[in-house]
Length: 164
Image (cartoon, rainbow, N blue to C red; front, side):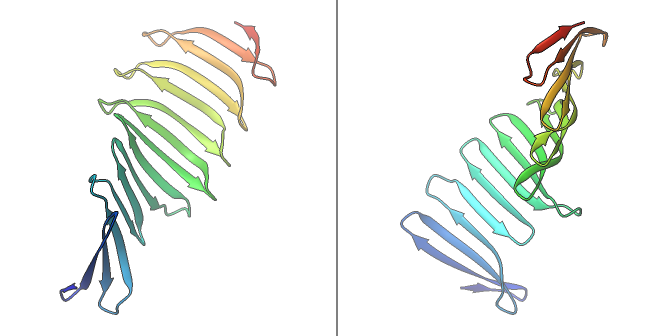
């Protein structure tokens, strides 16, 4: 076990990789990290959880509002969202590989609720989708000049009711 004035570290080897555990001066666990031979890792602390598996990276931390904030990279896309009681709840954002906003909207109790906006890589608004507690009620398409070109209304089965 390595020690310094702030903490100590214990490294254990298993058939699946290494487990690195850090303790504070009192001997309380601060964090644990699992390193697999494939370079995949899982790191857990009181403040956040980080996961790296292939092209998937995830970091979960506590928000000031009691929700959990998720930041995930899947391939080249970045997702940021909040959860409460294991369900998406709050702002949801997705980013293009170049870092510009791809989609933003809100979830309430695991269901899309309100307006979701979708953008191209240059930041032009492409469409808006309107939800009421998980049910899509309307969508709007926009051209590159930002002019609305089509509005679609949906019935309770999310089938097209009317194109405007």
